[in-house]
Length: 220
Image (cartoon, rainbow, N blue to C red):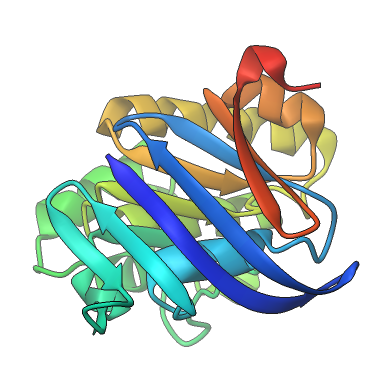
C-alpha cells in the first residue's frame, strides 16, 4: 500500500498554494490524478518518485519509508521501487530501442529485454533510435523501459496526451493490459475524463492545492 501524507508549497494557476494530500492507495490499483493545468499533478508525481522533496509529512510504500520529515529521511529515486514514464518520454536519443530498455534495468537480464520487446511489439524496431520512431512507438518504448526494472509502482505522467484518438485508444488498452499482467500499482496523470473513466479504479482530484480521493463511480 502507498501511504501519502505530504505538503509542498507551489505556485499554481490559482496563485501560491500549499499542495496537500493525505490518502492510502491499495496495491494493484490504477489511480488517476486529475486537475487543471498547473494544479500540482506532476508535482505530486515528482514527490512520490523522489525527484522533489516535500516540505512536511511522510511517504511510505509497503514496508519501506521513502520520506519522513520528522526523522529527516528522504530516499533517493534509485532507492524507490518505481518505474517513471515522463510526459515527453525522455528516451535517450543516442541509444537504440533495446538500449533504452536495457538502461532501465537494475540487474542486466537479456531474456527480460527480449520479453519486453515482444510484449510491446518492438522487436523489429530494436536497433532503431528514438528519432526514427512514431509517437506511439516512442510511448511503447518508454513504457517498456519504465517496466524494465520490475517496479511495484508505475508512474505515468500524461503518457498519451500527444497522440491522436485512434492511437490513444489503442495504447489505453495496452497500458491496462500491462497493468493487469504485471500486477503493478499504477499512478497516471490525465486531463481526459473519458480516459479516466475507462482506465481508473480510483481518482485523486486536485483543486486549489487540496487533493481528494474518490471512487470511479463518483467521478463526474
